[in-house]
Image (cartoon, rainbow, N blue to C red):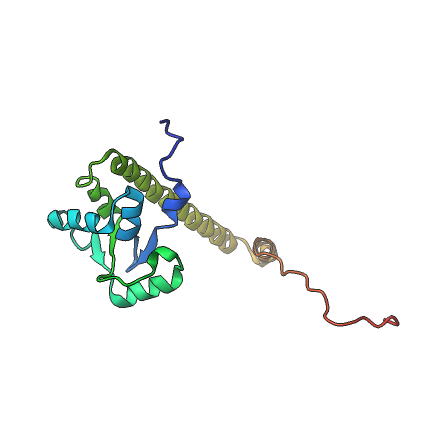
Length: 173
């Protein structure tokens, strides 16, 4: 397998990274699916090694957080009753999972997840840097350039869709 061939598409991993309690996290249910194990197996392995997972590496979702997340993510795999809310793993928690899940698939998946977190950090940093540079340029130049910056921002917003008038046209019009 070359570096360009992934066991799981990067976009699939990125779609399972959520922002909860000001942390980018992945849920135990999603991680179990990616690793190809039952969620209860993943949670059991974590509980057997709980000293590796302090609060800033892993936390269990509250009922409100879980309900809110379920309402935002409409997928069939979240249906049915659950005894407990899933666990959320920060990037460090996911990295720590590599120490307790040693199957060849788990190792490959963990590498890809780490790459996804790094890529997400790079994207966020570049967008922040671009916005900062635009703001700095706007402050640096006088009012005559404000028109240019406003025009750039206007070009960046998607156009309104053209709407056809409703009703019949009078042939005299």
